[in-house]
Length: 461
Ligand SMILES: Cc1cc2nc3c(=O)[nH]c(=O)nc-3n(C[C@H](O)[C@H](O)[C@H](O)COP(=O)(O)OP(=O)(O)OC[C@H]3O[C@@H](n4cnc5c(N)ncnc54)[C@H](O)[C@@H]3O)c2cc1C
Image (cartoon, rainbow, N blue to C red; front, side, top):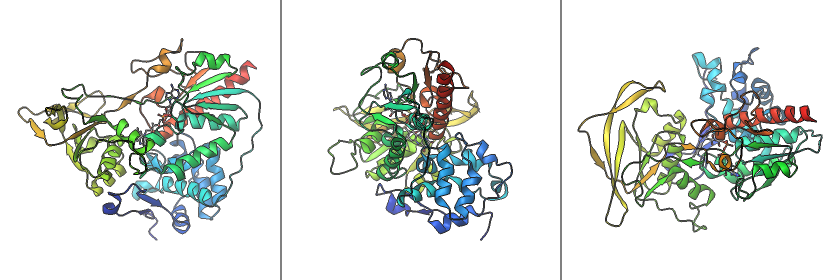
């Protein structure tokens, strides 16, 4: 075995998987997980832990995997994370724990994400209970939103003894994990629902179909005996380009496409959720959400173009996602910017006018600014346009809660040390505070706020 190279994870064949919604990666089996774990150098000063937003004791759990002690490995992870099977699959490990691994300097970093996923899947599939001791304190905390921020905050508070209720607007818990990230990257029944069940086993109650700001307000929750509130309501409001023709039939947001296919099960023949996807689809944007929308459209039978105004080197999506999308047959039209969507006489998309771009001087983000090439206009032959340009927080909670300060981007302002907002007893974290970010950052924020709430409540009583 070459210690500088990682043990490969099993994957579905690209041509087969491009036509089904089954999970692309099949993860490690016990033997390959033990082999991969044996590559870990168990560094004295593990840089990987410092880069994990929830501070999992990474070398400790990997050492247990190496010895085949998977329950013990799971217990180490459970101290820090409520959603290991999710994070093992969707965290951008290459920029976090794995990005810090010393083996990565001259060879390939230890596959920390794949090992985390293996441990979580193994204990779930083998019905191994992970032991956590809880001493109830009888104090009530409300959590708004059941995405990774809300679930983590709720789970951590429950472990500290609090009586926690999550209020969720949708009919199902999980946030983006259930309505956004597709089944082929994150299986809902076996992975997401199972991890949510684990949070419930800690005693957390989840009330779905409850829109805070409509069904009940934050002030009413505080009057109802909840001593603190955590807002983890995410950033689910999609942005559009504001170009001509954007209201045509056949233009929609990536969030709508993904919600219809994931949460409302349009991909399942037993459900009658409509999904008006055409033969040739343009996805506008180059982030993770764009890759998910592209790969979902492909699986629904369309030819798919990802249209991105900068070059491939600037694509914000994870490298792994771009690689998978290419393998499956997604076409990348980079340095291309839509300027108008053309409609037929019935109001349906019949093409998209675009211009070619080149890269100029760096802009405020440090990336080279895309500049239009004069006279480069052309019409792209597409019948569906899916906008994937980012999202922002929904203003419902802020507009129904007095005393909650927002920044220029309409995100909730918090004290970075403990997650406390400008309103007494109200904390916040995740995408509602940062704008669209990542699962693990949302979890890190939920964790920090849980600690902040605990300290706050202990200080007042
Ligand atoms: C398609 C897609 C793919 C992604 N892929 C990745 C990936 O591969 N890796 C990664 O790390 N990140 C990924 N992300 C980003 C990641 O999912 C988010 O950063 C993360 O889910 C944010 O967590 P959160 O808990 O703050 O919010 P969310 O997950 O958005 O959860 C917020 C919850 O609050 C609920 N809510 C909102 N308003 C109210 C209200 N008024 N009352 C009650 N409930 C309310 C919502 O219904 C939702 O369930 C992806 C995002 C999308 C959209």
